[in-house]
Amino acid sequence: MFIKKIFRHIWPIIVKYKWSCIGTFVFFGLATFFDFILKALFLKEIIDIVSDPASNRAEMRAPLMYLVFLTGFTLTIAFILSRFANWSYRYFGVRTFRESYEYAFAKLTNHSYIFFSNHFTGGLVSKSKRFAQGFRNTFQIILANFWSTFIYFASTFIILSIEAPTLSLILLIWSFIYMFIMYQLVKISLPYGL
Image (cartoon, rainbow, N blue to C red; front, side):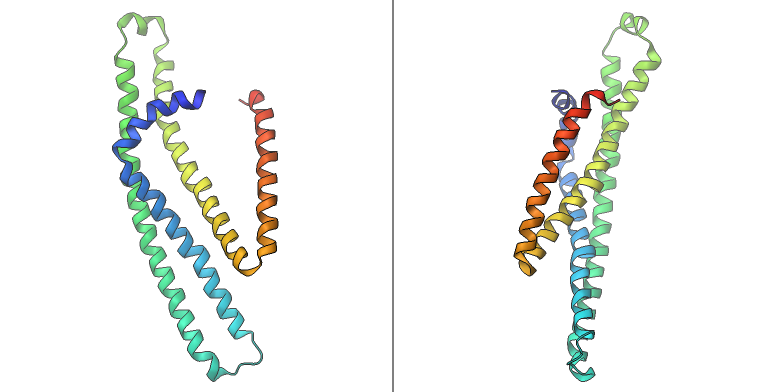
């Protein structure tokens, strides 16, 4: 398969900086969880307390102060985790992107002069550039799109299974049906793509 061929070239580069790659995913996932999921849960509790007509202001004060403190603490933790995620991403990104450029250049220089004279050199340079930039773009898409979507979906499913188990089951079934349909559509349209 085409992906296995590409992955065979990229994997040795990723393994060199595996801890920063793992750190990027862990810190980014935790920052997303704290910033979007926990914050929203605490704000929901604040709104529930404030909108309850049966409670008076004296009864609301202690739980509200506690929830406001938890919300601020959660945002602080999310900020710190996002800084760690950005640092891990920069550390991993700069080194692996440099290594991918060096790897592509080393592959080009392993060939003889006859190879370069028989092939369009500008095309080879652009292919090596696309390899290195493709690795960077792929990693950014995996991190920003797929990983954050997975964190949102898993968190939503867990919260829904606690609050409304029937609704979480409906969401899970619908998600599997949607993924199956999208997989079939992509499989059909892939040969006609660019």
